Amino acid sequence: MATAIDVDLQSVRRQFPSLALTIDGEPVVYLDNPAGTQVPQRVIDRTADYWRTMNANQGSVFPTSRRSDALIAQVREAAATFLNAASADEIVFGPNMTTLTFAFSRAIGRELRPGDEIVVTRLDHDGNVSPWLALQELGVSVRFVDIKVPECTLDMSDLHRQLTPRTRLVAVTHASNVVGSIPDLAAVARAAHAAGAWVWVDAVHYGPHGPIDVRAIDCDFLVCSSYKFFGPHQGILYGRRELLQRLRPYKVRPASDEVPTRWETGTQNHECLAGLLGAFEYLAAIGGDDRVRRPALEAAMDRIRRHERALVARLIDGLQQIPGIAIYGITAPAELDHRVPTVSLTWLPHRPEALAGWLASHQVFATHGDHYATELITRLKLVDDGGTLRIGIAHYNTASEIDLVLELLAGFRG
Image: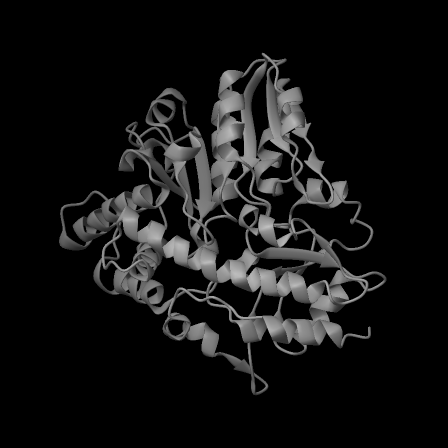
């Protein structure tokens, strides 16, 4: 099976120093990308340059502080471009998606009353479930939207059943971090807004695989983390400006009350923000531009999707040739545009941990377990079986790496 590559794959791979790593003389194959991607050299360089030339806190009159201020402003503009936000002051930085979601759920909780309802889904990572379950202590009810099995897609009919006049917020994933399914977020937003609810989107897993467009989705909030799209461990939040102004953050008294910095508690991780700029620049370069502009980012993601779609088709086709393997999620070739290239499988009676260990013994890295998707793994009745083996493709992976993992799995005898 041929792989259609719309990127210069060898040029791409040369930009990632870790892809040259060998262990016991064997090259490493990274298929653990849903847990965190590798980073290109420009991310490393941007981070190192911060330490060398602008390591200072914000708001002072001396040159290193002013450089740090300018960097943060530049990164905020780039993040707004990446998410297609209307302005940079709709971008909030924080440690990671989960921390940002907990912080905002507490602030949103200030506006809720006993009997109000929040809708979450069984498709989501627990980072987009537990922060809303925590509001039950305020008397808020949490309702769950089910999935369709075996394709593991969001049940839109059930979404409409769960929405009521008391619904205040709908929390939904942009793509499942276990089975890869991509919900119709514009349809979710229309239904939620018709019920008078806000829409909170977890785009962490979608970030490396397609263009994020908060205006096309028409969401009220969206969160992601750059360590999933070739950057450092850094969280990003988009919020409608009027909501960032309306909601009241928990913060120290001397901190600014201006949007968006009123939401950025404490000193931010400036070196990670520098690395984040490098990640945006890397993606823009794939799209043919040396500046972070929206057309370049969209072009980059289009090229990435074409390559990844060919790889995931190759992977699914090969897995289906191995007797006993069960794949969770969309597998039909005509439907692959409705998923990202993350494939979860089981192969009873083998435990996912044993499968991952077998691959790791050959320097092929893949993850196993529940992947923090508690509701999904429970819904699929896989808790007692140890969850799934998850094979996660990124755009720097190759057809030969996919063939290798298929060969290793076909040769597994437990």
